[in-house]
Amino acid sequence: MNTHLLALQLMACQGCLGAFDTLYHHELTEALPGRASARLELSIHAVRALIYSAMFIGLSYWRFNGLWAVLLLVVFAVEIVLTLWDFVVEDRTRLLPATERVTHTVLAMNGGAFIALLALNAGEALAQPTALAWESHGALSAFLFLCGVGVGLSGLRDAFAARALARQAAQERAPALRFGERECAVLVTGATGFIGQKLVRALLADGHRVTLLTRQPRAAAWMFDARVECIADMAALPPARRIDVVVNLAGARILGWRWSEARRAALRASRIGTTRKVVAWIAAAHHKPALMLSASAIGYYGIQAQGDNTVLTERDGPQPMFMSDLCREWEEAAGAAAAYGVRVACMRFGLVLGTQGALPMMLLPVKLGMGGPLGGGRQWLSWIHVDDLIAGMAHLWSGDEGGALNFTAPEVLSQADFNKVAAKVLKRPYWLPTPGWPMRLALGEQADLLLEGQRVAPARLQAGGFVFRHPTLAGALANLS
Image (tube, rainbow, N blue to C red):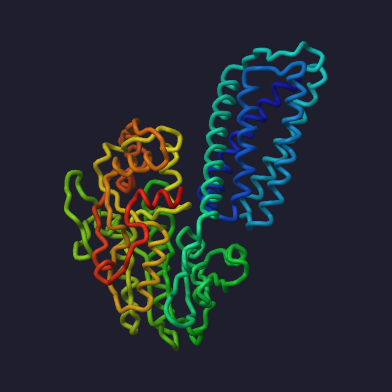
């Protein structure tokens, strides 16, 4: 049996499993690059990924003989220590989902197998003259080389994220937000998402009692150090329970698989279905909440043709398309709570900038020196810093505003100008245009979220006296970089 070739085949499997773990768990479901508590884990991931990158690329076309074999054994030992350390850090900082635990177990078993097989050949390699001996295995070698490049980019991504989180932690803390003048009982849906996490921590810091509606109560309780009550269904909340404010942020990720009928139904259920359940509970509640803040999006306005410079405000209507229909039905479901004396404010979010969410992936090409316009770059991009978004909620807490409000910054840029500003802030070149047709081919109508846009103004927020801490993109990105 050719144990060296078998080891390389197991390495190829390791590359596939690692890519799945990184994309599905670390990026999508867990969003580690934006979690302040994951800074050490990201640092370990970065070092491990760069080691794996060197291993994949090195072993793809070369045999390590003589002293090179000794170096390879040392690298194996370091990788094993880092893996064990990673396991300990993960268990101390977050509750891993079952799929991630299973994936990590399989990765550890597979990794141990290929390391053991390569170690079996160490004696023969040590007896050879010190050299990197060329040895190609055709398509397998090419695949391993590509795996090495991919895992190297992943390591750089994690290193950038860890550094950004370190800088953020070192920045002077902003004054604590005040959500009203008295302690409130607050029900939050969608609390484990990017925005929900920031909101819940701000509410706890201001002394409020928080109840979370979540599909994973145990993981949510872990996330907030057991300082919140977690329920999996509105039926678990007695009608006699006093809830003063409801913040409804629930909704499955809009970017993802193509908008098939099943996918559209899931998006509607996660937003409209959840909102209706909350309103049904309000209808039966003995004490009605005074306020309901419900998420929506500027997708309500549909898409704006490139070259159309019209500024959209809350007075503008929707368009006959899925994005608009989804937001309109979502707002209508929330608005039904007004029949029970609840002040309802529907918050139409623009692109929310933060260490989680879409921004890290948007900035990755820029950070790698490949920034440029996407799909022509003339589409409008309305955005808001996550701190201003949370502050906007606090602003509505004690006011009397209801209805729809645009949560976007005063400065709106084209997608090309957005990337130009990002490149300048990050001190990177701006030169590489990206065509839109591959994205349109892959995502269908969903590509409108990236290739089309809206020029939206926060007219009602500003009229109500709200002052943005980050009114310009340059300042917002500098704060987050």
